[in-house]
Image 1 (cartoon, rainbow over the protein chains, first blue to last red):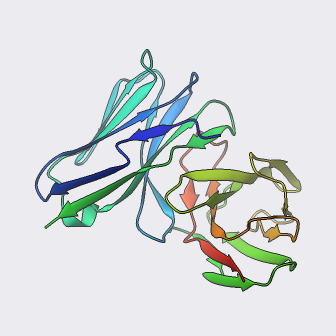
Image 2: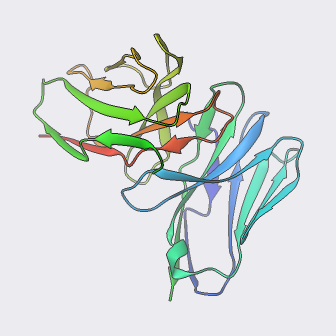
Image 3: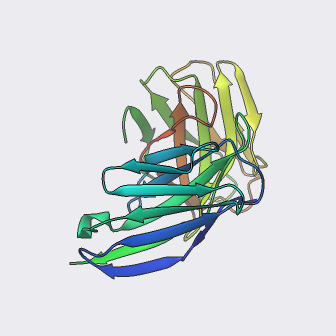
Amino acid sequence: SQQGEEDPQALSIQEGENATMNCSYKTSINNLQWYRQNSGRGLVHLILIRSNEREKHSGRLRVTLDTSKKSSSLLITASRAADTASYFCASTRGNNDMRFGAGTRLTVKP
Amino acid sequence: DGGITQSPKYLFRKEGQNVTLSCEQNLNHDAMYWYRQDPGQGLRLIYYSQIVNDFQKGDIAEGYSVSREKKESFPLTVTSAQKNPTAFYLCASSRGPADNEQFFGPGTRLTVL
């Protein structure tokens, strides 16, 4: 079963705007990762945040983790048309218990 | 897609046939994984292997089989016992356990005719 649930399922914004995607999970985790997938391609790792971290930055990406609410958010600032893709969160409970959500499909209009 | 390759990119199979999907990595990673992705869905784990000659079932292993005879290779066989095999199959590898970053191949789209 899927542990993570992304919200919203789809998001459409204009270039230059910020995009926020949320992820909720059901059980305690070791870490949470965000991945990006262009249509019909493999996934690309974006960022990993550990359970004892609350916020992490990488370029235009900002990830937060709230373990009390079992949720995470991914913020993409100053979005570009090239950011158009599906974004997945993946939560890890143990050594090989990694669960992906259904993803958020982001469309950035030029 | 890093140093992990999958072949073929597209695969067509008749009902009742077994088919093997290839996955090779040159990243010297210990762990390898197979996922299935259905349209508009996330990834579901089929099998994973943490070390050569060892592999474990994931959430949806029924109708699939794997082998890990070499560190670099983790082929997946979709058997005729898999009732709904049409899907996008993704292979991944990581340095160690799943809580490390996973590197994904480009995927194989399997269609059963």
